[in-house]
Length: 189
Ligand code: DGI
Ligand code: FE
Ligand code: FE
Ligand code: FE
Image (tube, rainbow, N blue to C red; front, side):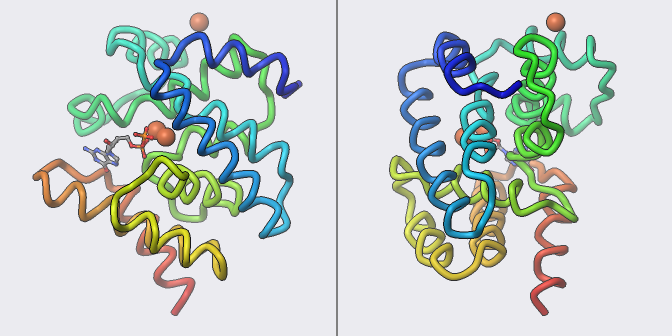
């Protein structure tokens, strides 16, 4: 069951007001993209609703949730707590909210990095996360523009923006982020 009315208050209760505004922006943008590219709008909206549900959890809860789910973290993941909230939210939504839509949970799980072979639904979430109305960095406008034509093109720009951000700050780069970008590039060639 993925009933919106049941899920919305649960997510809203566990995020900050600022985060909630971001999530609402991602939901609206994901709906729009799903309509434009012929995907199920309701499922895109649920993925967007859930994507940052665990973003404000303390590290102890993130790691406990992932350990309970039997997930093994790479050294890079252990060193980068921002990478854990997608997988944690996916486990939490399945175990505690009864969400059993695998493709929706995968979109939640992989929204921070993308992955090679990612589905259109997964791309919608990556693009919506980077281009919702509250995103004011320069790349957001270019991503919105690209998304008028091509979901893959907009997803590629989103990953590029992500990689630049990480390089500029000297952060480690998760291999999936690189693999996802290479995969998109080779598909478009
Ligand atoms: O949760 P949001 O802030 O809406 O956005 P997000 O889930 O796409 O990214 C969350 C954070 O994760 C962001 O501040 C940058 C960081 N991040 C994303 N990809 C990588 C990463 N951090 C590291 N170290 N490596 C990555 O590949
Ligand atoms: Fe996120
Ligand atoms: Fe639990
Ligand atoms: Fe987000």
